[in-house]
Image (cartoon, rainbow, N blue to C red; front, side):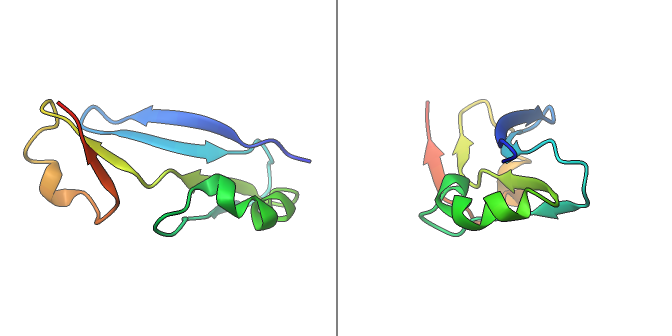
Length: 84
């Protein structure tokens, strides 16, 4: 079984969190729905991860006072949490 590992990508404007496996097959992105997380979809991620390099972005956005105002309008409509 291929293990999913959580990763972080800092673009300089926002930080993206995602999970991926290390399979060398073709890339496949799985996007979870509202009120779910990638772990909730393990039932079909695990079989797909045997043949694909699976990416599963963590679709929760945290906006802080340090988030540039120019970035906020371009954020997708995702569950958001606000911190100070």
